Image (cartoon, rainbow, N blue to C red):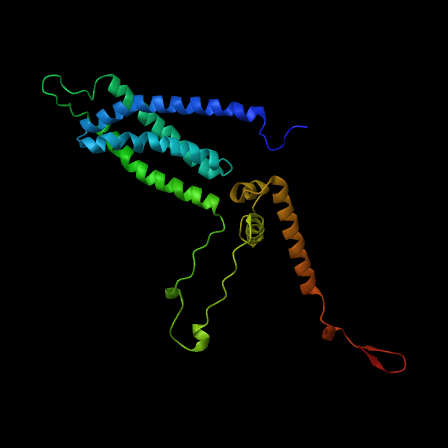
Length: 253
């Protein structure tokens, strides 16, 4: 009998594959690093900024790829990350292409680098600003995916201090759902409110990470709960049962 603790041989085969892929990425980054640094120097970045510039551009590509794998079940986030990958890959290719044409090379006599055209400068300058904005946005997407039930705590400034005791009473805050399944039930129940768009099974799967089978169970359970609540509301109260007269004249409830 095989040892259940030992991983299968196929898992060990992944280790050299990962090492080789990481090595290829490092070699490719080193080749692109020189082009990015020279492009930044040609656009009047200082020496230290130009040295770090490639990490902002090619580094965001690596982060976006990892985020795309993590957010693959969220259609909106997946499109966003793939857009970043496509845009920054194209921009990195352009910088490397122009570097190959010698646009960013220093003059061998004066050791000065010619300033590239304004549209090239615009691309190079936009990449570093875009890395800040897009990288921060990716962090928000990943944070919401990893912690979907996180809710901001109520601060002391949110409590009204004036008026009577009744006015100062803080309305009860609904407790956050215990898990993603309960969160999906709450969201689906809310979507059944008149005027709201009913959440489909695919929407529940994409937004809350539940399986397709769990999404179907969410829909059926919520529908049954609503039906039970409606039946309980329509049931007459004991005092509302009309009185009945018996043949001997007595009144029965």
